[in-house]
Length: 373
Image (cartoon, rainbow, N blue to C red; front, side, top):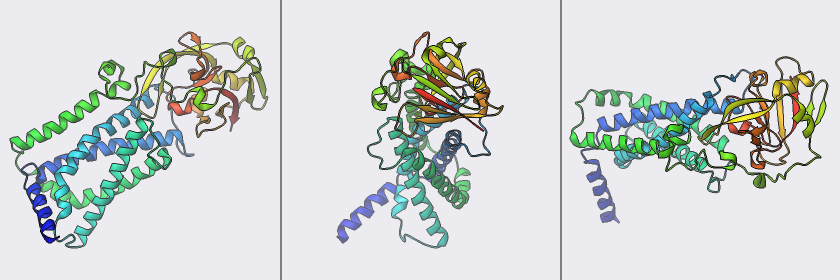
């Protein structure tokens, strides 16, 4: 066992002696990781606030593409962090086997912060990747909650680690520019980031959609040329018939049949579906303005709206439309998509479509609207 242990340490020593594993390279990768995690953290917290708004938070309805941009940036940056994180871990892993394992209190804090940071960062990247692929079987937890709170743990560990390592980073950056081999290594990492970005970002940036070979979603593929995350079959929803009624609850509650909805004034708007998984696609929607339905039941100014689906199960069977979106003339109870009747998978007979909101809040198969204070 002693000989095996010595052999293992010899391998680590050889790895540590690599000309690429220097403080300068590690510092450069660390700064890039810090910037990337900062972007992911900021856009991720923003998305969480939009979906679960506290009383102090207000989210505008314009510009209509804002959430599409912030969430697309969140996912694209998260994907780019994969090769960057792997490169950083490869650069510094020999230090995990340093002897003695703890030299003083500062060293102990540094190692603890690294342990928490690596564990939380890997959890964020892996779980985010599984969510993009919509493969939830390996995750024995609700992704959204776990991803949100793990982000706070990673951010705290990153701040502690950055503070402890600031003198080392400053010293490393004062050293000469890395040699050819180190430059080639950093260039390879940059090229890997560029490749994974260019081959996935097309699911949000449509001009690059032809390069979108690694992304799990093609925004132009699906019923009526638009993807769906949950089909009617998966939601347990069947096609509504003449018995369909929309209940609008307010000071003067109304119940509307499909014929009643069709008879109301209709308007059109070009709006994107921007999904939290990172894909987005625009379409032309036609239907009744939400604010007109609210006026029909005498909703007070500044009211919000709870939108409920005929779907009985699921965490997103209902959503709350913010007051800004309720007022916006682009917010529709849509009945047509690109001029054709809504496909059942897109929410027939009607669905919510509102500007600058995540796709999970654009409730399908709407059966009830309730005015909230």
